[in-house]
Length: 203
Length: 114
Image (cartoon, rainbow over all chains, first blue to last red; front, top):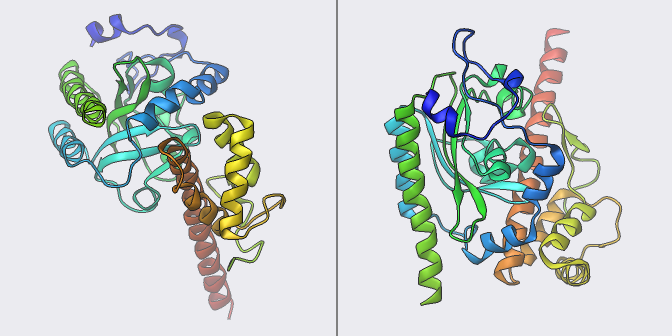
């Protein structure tokens, strides 16, 4: 775990998040609200999402299968490919979601865990949401019972953070280096699939 | 058009999600298109579903219909519409769910009070 943390560019160890007092856990990203808003509302990023057709009706079967496989591989109930827009996050593919989020096909953007990955272009991991400074007040935690999350940013070949490939669950848990390695593999396949759409559209 | 204000509250408690407005829609469109084109497109969408783009408060269902009309535009506008639709749907579902819960609580209260 130390290996992973050493390559992340987080700062301020005072804000370290922890699932247990003996384990330092994953650092909390230091991103200001202004930085977050600027990233989410960047016109070029939104145009990139549009050009890739990531919000088109109809779920990509391959992305859908990746969500299922990732959730199963990590033993978690939820796997998602999210696209973070200015006003909402859209579930481009999902496994395991039911209820209002499945019906709405996303959530308001201010509740999106994935927005942190979009703003920082870094992985975002929450092992115990009830004790995490950035998400403990989030309605997805307080009302819907989300407790753990690991998301890998999906960054296009043009350098824009589109959303995340992520897994989530309703019980707190620790994520190992091996878990994150597995998740990065799925994210890598997902972004390749997304980029293939661009190539297909340009043919 | 079928919804009478304030059929849904201004916020969807306990999620505290604000009722989406024309202003929110327009601001989002401006991010994608710039102010002039955004205003033009939103006006056209409102015309299609026959709602007043100047109204201070518009029922969420009517806004949802107008956002649906944006889908007929290009990919960029449709992407913007997706975000707005999710926000509107989230608000409507959660507000309705809360109203249902409140009604149930009131019914249970009146039953146990007898």
